[in-house]
Length: 204
Image 1: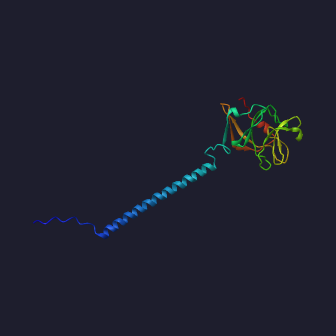
Image 2 (image 1 turned 180 degrees about the horizontal axis):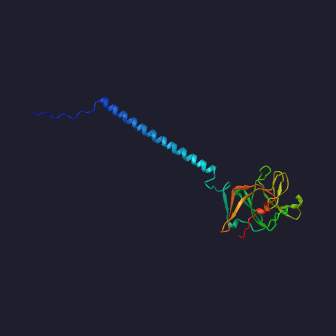
Image 3 (image 1 turned 90 degrees about the vertical axis):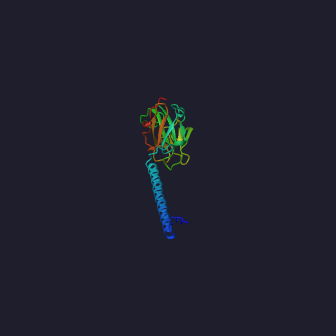
């Protein structure tokens, strides 16, 4: 009887174990390499986001960015100022020389007044019934008046009374073709007696 062909020799135990060990090392190195690259990518993304946020390149909305005020929220000339909570400012529509209590030549228009008092930072409300006679401006009713220490400001943010070191600060304002306005709450200019001259003409 013819002898049966012998089976192909199988890898000896030590050689197979060495092959499996090398395969595990390769897999481990590949995993570590992928993990390192993934970590670097995440770190780079976080740094990029921080960079964009620091330099304000993501065009934030709300306070610190540009706040759009629709036309139907803009007060009529001479009407009560509108409180824009999302931007922390008062939107005032001055009628002629209204608010120009020092006579610097204001001719009216829109002003965005930062509601933070220049004294110690209290939020300044509008008091529509406050009589200017109490601060030596009789006949003018309606003033901004700080509840903390009494600093009082005209409709144009001009300081007439109290410890505040200057008039109310203003924010950059742009009128859009659809009648809305954009107020850049990140572009704040220190208040000055020329506040009435900063008003932007508005025809609605």
